[in-house]
Length: 308
Image (cartoon, rainbow, N blue to C red; front, side, top):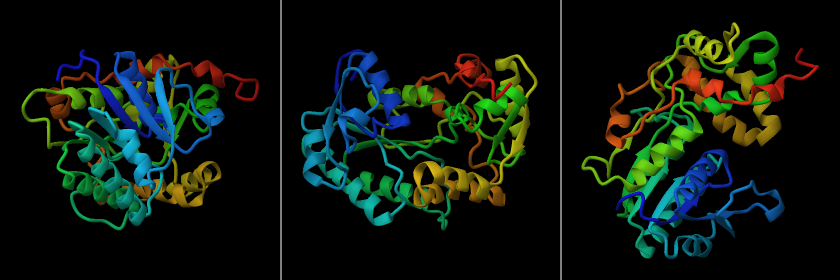
């Protein structure tokens, strides 16, 4: 189905950063977008053109209503790492998509996933959701991103970058990572939703940025984008987890931080690296270079008297 023909898309997770980027891109391209959220209307982000339905993924009937009349679906799971909950969410989505006649689901696993089974809930719950969605029988494309550049445009990074040229993140300096932006995730999702080329449906893609970057190489990209010197420091994963817990709660923070504890152990150093451009070629996308992404962000919001 050509992408320029308007479709009816269910976007699970549209009130979050990743799903929101997908929803905005789809509406910008003329598609009709509907989502499901537990947030009260006053607490929802601005999503022009997106129809927000109040409900929860745990509610089978609410999920069915979300998918009624939908032709395509983009799915990302919420920040829960309870396997029982995640399995039920995925089953409700898969059942609703099949019963509604959805043509294709694109599932954003929110992270790369190791080949072997681990004890990391952030990996295994997403692996479980992927398996359940495949069981639905609906055409499925899985996207596994590495780490988002947008994570670095935050109150934890912005002031230090502006005042000290310090870029700190909980990945070892030597870890090669194909950093990607939310916008490029949205581009890959749209491409996967509507791709007609052979070799896309049924596949799992390790999407990522233009190239793999170590911590020092990432700092060099930031230096180019910001026009100032920048140095990288690996942030201890336990310190990252403590800070994140203050924002999203201890349980969710432990789930997210599990990825970084795993990477810090060094047993799978290439998990977040690029795929040699395979996904980009298959999907027909061109990820933005990291320095170009940096140059387009409004870093001046962190240029405060406290950071001077």
